Amino acid sequence: MTKKLVLAVSTAAVFSILAGCTAYDRAASYVKEPVVSDVKVGMTKQQVRAIAGPPSTSATLIHAQGTCDTYAVAPRDGKAQTYFVSYNDTGHVMNKGYQSCSEYDSQPK
Image (cartoon, rainbow, N blue to C red; front, side):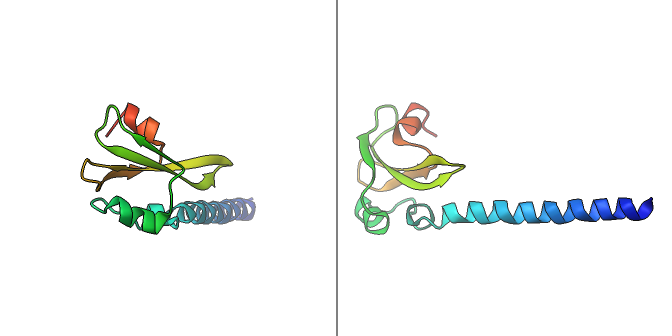
């Protein structure tokens, strides 16, 4: 009986480790997007566009200050994934993250 228990626990541990590797690899792929990995707060809009290319959409923010670009990045769980980069009135990055400009503007952080 103890050999069966040890085998069951060992098998569960192996599957847990493999599942963790898969989740890690999936998460790492999002960070490889240039707009995610290389864009830093304080960069100019020209620097961002040189790294990430043209955005999917651009908008003037209403509740937050400045302007904002939304980029389409690697899908997550089969759903489109968006990443925003917001700029202050001098055209420098002030915030960025995984949501659209409209979502960010409705609840700026």
